[in-house]
Image (cartoon, rainbow, N blue to C red; front, top):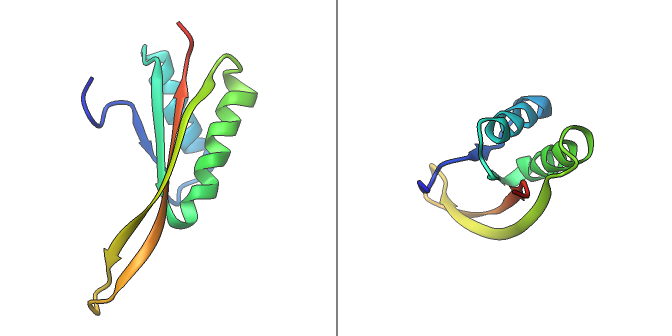
Length: 93
């Protein structure tokens, strides 16, 4: 499987856009979809995972959740820590 295959990056668009992206991935045959976000989009990523699981695809399970921190450099040269999350949803075979 390719490194960035079946990954949904959550940003500032409406939640349902990302939900639709996840459902589309599953409907195209993916057994696993990774939802990635950082910073303020983390809560939106959690919402996406829960909406997919509870409203649209109850058979999908949370396989793994990874949290971490990335160091980013600002334009002024300072380093800023940004939290990250990766939620792995799995559709049982």
